[in-house]
Image (cartoon, rainbow, N blue to C red; front, side, top):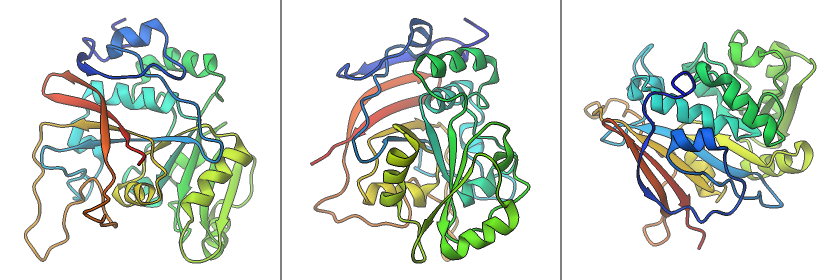
Length: 288
């Protein structure tokens, strides 16, 4: 158990999982502290969940050169990395933005990379659930400005879909060209249409579960379009703070969208667990 676990099991504080959908094997439940039932996907899009680590004061990044990644906020906590690997394992595809790709320049979006010791355990779960050996990586870039040397764009055997605009497609093709397992989703206009993209993932690629690892703007737009089902949030004990005005603010959990005070999105807490000074929250979006 110690080789595949992040240390001691998570301490379960609260659980309200209705128990619908596919569950997890005993070994993983013993570490996680309970089950996580993954509901059936809607007919028109994948079942979509997101994962963030936030500081005590609600920031997701220090936004400093070479210190902008989420690992700076989590301090690489093993329980946060293990949970990230679990969420990727149960995702048919992972979606992220070009900005996140640039910040995490050396990262690979495979299911096991956050916690390599549990690679066999998580690979076996993907196989048991009938998923492909690696999750598809979906990269959002309206401009097509992608770092061509990013390892994430060249993982052997991984399906890669670049969601972009007509102008962005020409730019991406000049860098990545055409190759096996490379796909393009092109939106008319100047922005990627996330509603159309998720419908395409469901109908054209058979994606039934989608993990969003995009940044605050991607999360905000997914929320605004009612495309998020579940939210996993690791609350770090760090306090990130903010720069004094008029300097650029360090990003919070949601950016780029302001919700109406009368009808803001609302979460229903599903579970809460703890390890040390870290809290791990799972919640579902309340569909009015």
